[in-house]
Amino acid sequence: MVNDVKLYLALPVLNEYGNLASLMGSLHGQEEQDFHLVVCINHYEHWRQQPEYAETIADNEKSMAFFSSFSRFPVTVIDRASLSKGWNPRYGGVGWARKMAMDAIAKIAQPEDIIVSMDADTYYPPNYLSEIKRVFNQDTKAVGLAIPYYHELNGNETDKLILRYELYMRHYALNMLRIKNPYAFTAMGSAMAFPVWAYLKAGGITPVKSGEDFYFMQKLVKLGRLMNWCETIAYPSSRFSNRVLFGTGPALIKGNTGDWTSYPIYHPELFNAVATTFSTFGQLYTEELDTPMDGFLFSCFKVNDLWQPLRKNYRSKENFVRACINKVDGLRILQFLRQQQQLLEVSDAQVLAHTYQHDLSLILSENQIQVLAKTGFDSLTTDQLDFIRNRLFQKENSLRKEMHFNCL
Image 1 (cartoon, rainbow, N blue to C red):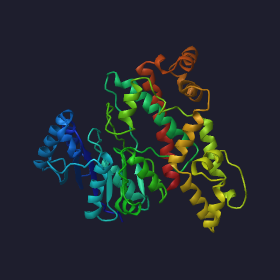
Image 2 (image 1 turned 90 degrees about the horizontal axis):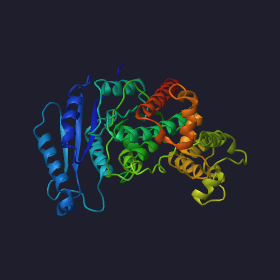
Image 3 (image 1 turned 180 degrees about the horizontal axis):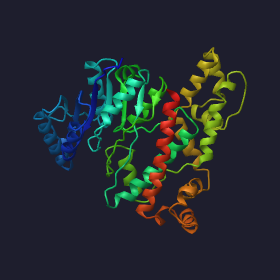
Image 4 (image 1 turned 30 degrees about the vertical axis):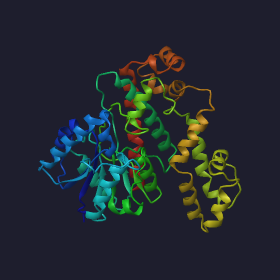
């Protein structure tokens, strides 16, 4: 019997009036129409005293008016933008907006219903909601879904920047999938979904100023099986934005200055070190073994031995291994990769050229590959970067699909 779940869409809105008509059009065109949109229109209250935010406040007022007259499908608006209803300085931002929308959904939805996290500047194809519903009907025990994404190009100067950023994200995801790591997910607020019961069991989304999507998906992994593939794609926009501390917008801003230090192309051997560490968790239950991550982990947690306390607290091998996986989570892996990458005398372009030499040879000559490794990404055209992005996207989606069906 098909589980007749309902979809609830959680949408933060800040200075998004120009995107609303397109978004609502894509939602109106969805194959699946049994959904309820919950919107949190928000800004800080003290912005009203700062002239530089006048346009943002006016834009949010237009969004309020837009939704007040919208009637094509059910919409609930959470007003954190009207006079005296804005955020106070101690809290606010997209993390809080997502949390308020999702918490409101959790109060009115059934446990099996699905929360779909969205962004206003993202295009969702007609099969988007129906595919989300289908995969959750297929696996009712799944705690969530990281949905494939693809940034469409604008035909302007931001194209090279978004492609460079995607190379960072694709390469990271490909290697995490390659080593079959439990934290092999890409967290994007515009492209994730989870059942209400899992949202509540995880304690809800943590309203940090940036990365609330990453931290929440990490919490889901610690609860159970996170799906990584479905037959649809979210298409986020590529725009400059400083409303969060890290993510696509800030990456483009930093990248525009030539600074990609926060988004490196990690050496594949570093992922192998992570894989080796995870592969020893079972043996560590009964043996004293060194792992490639010991130095980092002991320093990170300020301990001389991370494993012995876990042995004391967990009496079965299965629970011990799970505790190790929860301890060495996605955040710790990223921190390890970043620390170790800084110790290597190798450039991002050299890592990419070496790792994907076969794929590059389909579009670049041997001499061009050598130039890439020597001089960096500036030697590549937008079309060449896009070709590499597409090759990595195909490989990533293939691995996502393989992992998805292997886990069913």
